[in-house]
Amino acid sequence: MTLFIFIVILSILVLVHEFGHFITAKKSGIKVEEFGLGIPPRAIGKKFGDTIYSLNWLPFGGFVRLFGEDAFDESALKDPHSFIAKPWYIRALVITAGVIMNFLLSIFLYYIFFISNGYKTFTLPLMFDHKFTFGRAEIRDTVIMGISSESNASEAGISLGDTVLKVNGVSVTTLTDIRAQTAKNADNTVVLVEKYPSQELKEYSFKPIFIENNVPVLGVNLGKSVVLHYDSAIEKTTVGFLHTYNMLEYSVTSLGNLFKESFRSRNIAPVSQSVSGPVGIYNVVGGIIEFSDGKLLLSLLDFIALLSLSLGFLNILPIPALDGGRLFFILIELLRGGKKINQEVEAKIHGFGMFVLLGLFVLVTIKDVLY
Image (cartoon, rainbow, N blue to C red; front, side):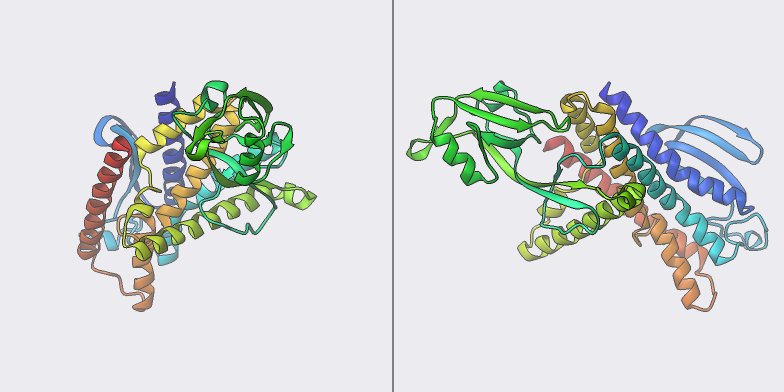
């Protein structure tokens, strides 16, 4: 089940992204040589018109191969159906079309999610303090981010992501509140939580564990999170756009903070631990299936929207081999007064970028498997 859903999610993201390149190229009169799902070698392929539609053996990506995209032949510069022969703005549109489609998919899925969930998010963990531009932020400091192996909380039914609302009938908002109320009844503690992601209120009763100085605790690690509410009529009407912006802004800000932390500590761990490849995504999908509590479809919609947004953001970065890297070369061309970069040189730079990206892909996969 997990593997099937995982493959479907990746396929949707890749198809949407590559379809953006494909349809924009077709409408711009550029010959599309191949539209492939997966990474070669090719498993099957069928040619319709000028284009080969293929399925490839490695299901972790896709591609659109355009005539003249990496052309070394001077004749491609004169062919009206060649990518390289098109004006800069057509080439830029074709390159960015995949990213635009990823953003549009996120917006569409967020509309479905919020209409179905009362125009509020599930609990969103906060790595750093952040003021969201749109919506009303409900900050929570009692979200369970970890459970000790010695704790009785898991056996009682408490899960990661649940929010502690009351302990022994008393409302709690901080760790200090929880410890104070737990100490009042160390034999048996009654905890009211909001389940993640179902938002159902449930009460659990279990015996605390004791740490040094015989202090009773629940045996859970707490973190900060936020629930975003979109209350006004205009917010509800534009919620897909607003939440897409909120999540993109928070992702960019968090990434910047992680790099700052890595430079400050001279340790790559803060950045590396926040990056996941296919194995990490597979594990997240498994966690969603296991802990969705009756809201599996909404949880998956929320996750796919965020993945699509992340994929679009990653691809627009000015890194060789990515869409943003190719767009960067068009910018250089404009700065040079329309003089194109030598195609062989550009192809070698993109090839090196792909080699580096594949190396990082392998390292991230090893990290996800081992940790």
